[in-house]
Length: 323
Ligand code: NAD
Image (cartoon, rainbow, N blue to C red; front, side, top):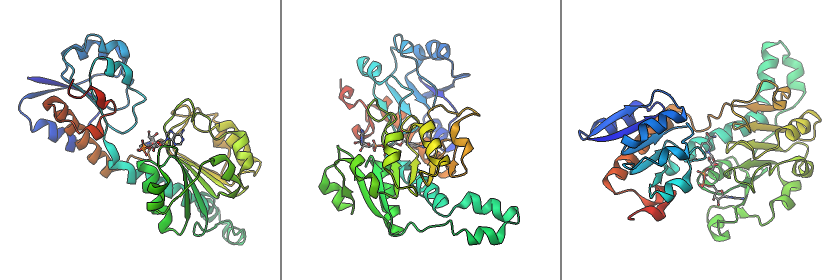
């Protein structure tokens, strides 16, 4: 029997995919502690992992391991270089929840443009007439959106923003101008230079050394006072203290933040002080539908890894395939 180790809960649809095979034993991990990985991995043929940190040292004795399947597209919790060294493919789920995340980014943008939180509070507080007189809402139509990162989610958001009548620009050195033009998106070579003309900036890049704190005091200072900043990508891309200061001082219009430098954020996170920030608990990709789809693809990647038929497009370290 092949042993499939599950780290984190799997949606019933994904479990059904694995249980349909009669040559597998499913082993659920009791905890997400490093010691549990070290103890369980030597007997595992496959690992399906959600958000736990996979310790590099646990791979040393993982001699049977044929695939690690990430329940998502990000993989900062997995030591890719160590997996590559041991010849173990790391599979991700691809674009199946790109639309889900893009929809959440759109929601944050709309909630801010329509002053959704403040209007809700005004109605409940009996502040009806004053709220109507403030004219706080504005239209996305005719505004310019800058996407930083034009991968799967950036593209999915471009489509949605265009449907709202927005002009979309994107900065992504890895995507050619022609591919952006095909999507009706203008390629930007120097994103900092265009900041004064932008109404909404939305981040869709991974957290890398060069993307850390890419939106900080200097960038915020270049933006229009009514501009919105959206981050559904990864924490650490924005200097949260600088953003909070800009929001409180009215130097920036609003911020929609799904991902934080430290998660969950501490109670004294400076963004909590601003009612121009709308915050969500890293759930841009977490809908019922997306979880079901994710679990199925992550489970299918486990089976494909065991059967030696992984789709290279879903393998982060595809160079190990066939070795
Ligand atoms: P992707 O790999 O398809 O796209 C990322 C793009 O960023 C690529 O096109 C790449 O060329 C570009 N890029 C890399 N470095 C760059 C840089 N320095 N400047 C500009 N562009 C750069 O990834 P995706 O599926 O679109 O996901 C984007 C991000 O969203 C990832 O960080 C992922 O972890 C995150 N994400 C968040 C959630 C959530 O729940 N909030 C859910 C899924 C994904």
